[in-house]
Length: 448
Ligand SMILES: *Cc1c(COP(=O)(O)O)cnc(C)c1O
Image 1 (tube, rainbow, N blue to C red):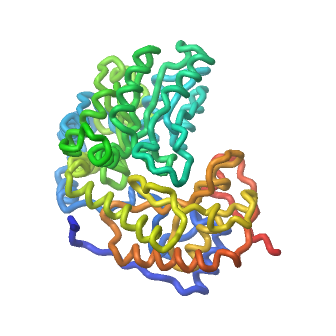
Image 2 (cartoon, rainbow, N blue to C red):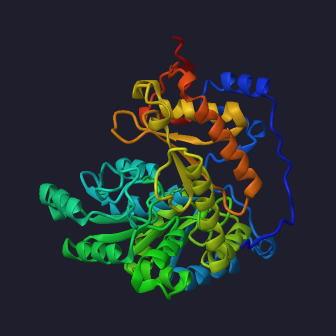
Image 3 (cartoon, helix red, strand yellow):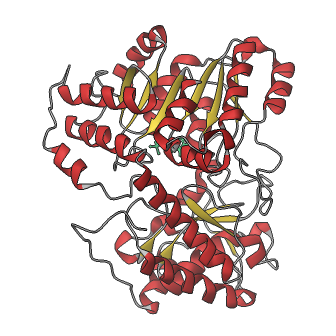
């Protein structure tokens, strides 16, 4: 079953092998430095890279650009209330802007924040307040092959250990990220969300859901949590968010827009406190760094994100790429999550040490072989961590079709067959902030 046909199209071109080799060299073997026109199939991220619907394009024309009290803001407010159940909304230019507004309001120096797994911008915003991010994933999270329905869950046991060490008075906020982006997009159950709610009450903390992929998460709940087999994705999404005091949202994910985000809450006093920081960093709280027309497109996108036809199509695409790769014997993280397929670079290149960045080698090989751009999430992106060597192939929403994925499959198979003949990479530049080096650092091949 497919849910879309195309109304506008964009040309793409596969550069020749020689052009790809040269582009890679000029990019310092870092695909963030490639020109997008030199990329054939772009699976770098699913953030803001999707296609808007005809209804969203139509809504752009309704945009009202008043500085304060725009009807476009009111339409966003209604969409957030209907889809997510929160009456108070503050727009932001994207998810990290919303994080700055909310965490800048809630956190202070010395606080500790448990989260199933902090997304990188969340971790940075927690640190920016002088607070400490404490990841509390389940045991199965980093096991590449364990078949569990909710590998993204928040471990309340681990969070309890954190609290017993630092004291509840230093833990004012608890976050659950659904789906768990930094754990291969794995979902979080409603049962787990209820437990986190109870835990937050116990220690008198504000419970925030990082809701960037709330609709994808709701689909997995529908599929895997018995109690919700008969509920719609829209009903499940609302119920899961009901447990939260507030959400941070990136419209670039399940808002189905190219940029935008917001904070939403049911707590009026928190809303009032967030407004001043919003004005300082984002804009007046009825536009928050967004054009009125973009508020309109996000309002429509939020409603579309929980339509069964949309979300089934979305998850089916991710899953079909995963099963095509799996059937061809390519090692991947299983089961596939909501927004991407993760290749297990450690199994591609057991002869490469983590200091030779096997994941980044795989990213370069995929581009060289087929013009496919993915992203490394292993020892290059996370220095000094013992995370698995993964390469993420993120699927932009409503953008690619089966033929594109067949090309990705053929490329991955060719790269896998050639796996014994590649050498590692080493850093050629040394960026100031090691945590952000995968965006900018240049590398060079290690010659044996
Ligand atoms: C993308 C994302 C963010 C940040 O949103 P941006 O729009 O990229 O600033 C925060 N949390 C999670 C889980 C995300 O996936």
